[in-house]
Length: 78
Image (cartoon, rainbow, N blue to C red; front, side, top):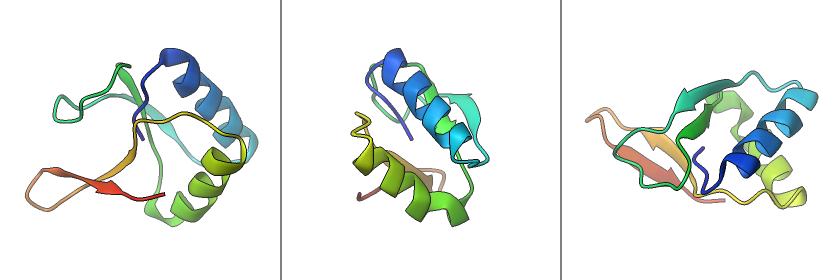
């Protein structure tokens, strides 16, 4: 998950940790254009819960991406 601001990245980190979602802060891949150098990685199985939290708490994100087998990043719709 990529962000346009560090503030939103840290807010999402706090909300997801509170919901006990296993996350890692990670540098935003250069292939993803974002205003923030931080991204959050989480397990595929947590996608539904992450989407619910982002939507209900109105976290501003650039997008959620999944790395394809070709090494590219595909956007996942909310």
